[in-house]
Length: 114
Image (cartoon, rainbow, N blue to C red; front, side, top):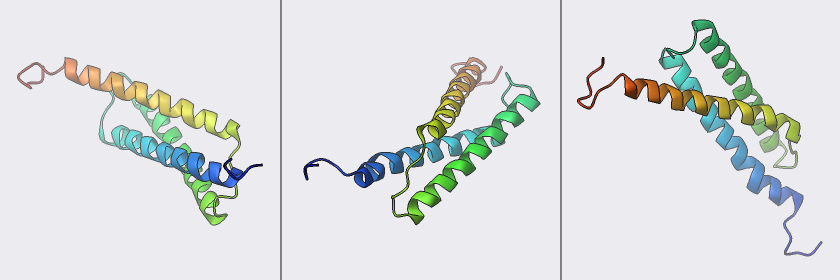
């Protein structure tokens, strides 16, 4: 390997570390929304189940981050682990967009609720 090509360790630090931080950011935002707002297009059970999944995956990401830091970036993550996290982030984005649309539809131009 030439010295101009990045090492596996460097790639892990440059790609995996920020990716894990992004997952934490979006799971945290989603958790805040689900804990602080009543999502009208969900039943209480559906909202609780989504919140539980967010909490579970947030803990999984925290564990992955901890292992990554403890090994000084020497340990990667199976791509198969990232897929469900990515799907949940996408689902949460969709919920947040729909929630904002519903909220805006219930507010007129004067900022009054209907």
